[in-house]
Length: 149
Image (tube, rainbow, N blue to C red; front, side, top):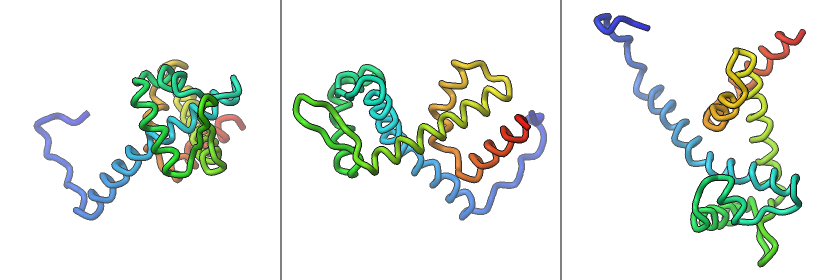
């Protein structure tokens, strides 16, 4: 770390800094939908259905919050639901869930490769996976492949 008495690094140009912060805002806006899609896919794969009650419990949110976000998924064309049958992903929702799951697994693998314990890697990946760029993911993947070979 730098000594607090040292001179500060020059700030990036305004457009560069604005682009960086903008990327973060976009990632935050989509992170919630990505988490829901990934969880719905996992619930359907493991138990055949994704009920709002199960979604709420697993995400640690209220039932009302889950219903509100499920409605947003439906508006975005990522999910459908049937009365008394739960929530289902559309083809677009399934594709999103698959991308998010792959990203999650890659981030976990990288974190574990650098020595992060399993549970910490899983928890940290939940935040990182939404903010990491495709360029960085490709670098993570290349690093892991070199390490294996």
